[in-house]
Length: 115
Length: 113
Image (tube, rainbow over all chains, first blue to last red; front, side, top):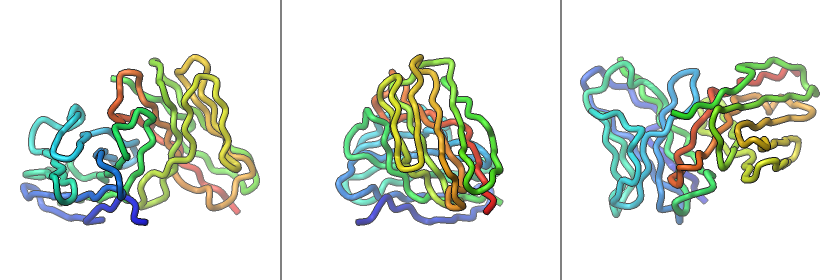
């Protein structure tokens, strides 16, 4: 009865390194969403993926950020050459289909700290 | 882009008191949702509203979808210590069929036993 699983829960990187965040959706869910939460703020949409497809990446920064959801395995959010401003909590959510209800099931988040 | 203004930003209340928070927008939404986030955790859905004017309850929680489709409120009655956390409103714009929610800034609730 696993929910959305994210790892690592906490990640520390130095400026210029790469960060990889992983997300396994709930069983039976084929749609994954990534959101970012800066300290003291609400969540901001980044990207929406289905298996092997990026459906909407309008919230992704133009550079250094990429996301994938391969046929096998978890969804990956990759941040290259991290900077201090990338420090945030990154949440993954899933839904059984392309939701029009907005009801998303969130993971516990991955907290990235860039030194 | 669309924004949600959530108020109050924080509340410090006595156990047993009722709580009210709201969200407003300059644009309309098709769906309003209220989430709660505990420290170090992800948001958990509390209530979802789909129709203008809809009033929905979940235990001690009651939420309404404003008739103009530009606002929503959440009430918590008889608060208890475990109500502590950050409450977020979120809206699904009419143009979105991709789960692209717009979140408010959150209301931090603290309850004094």
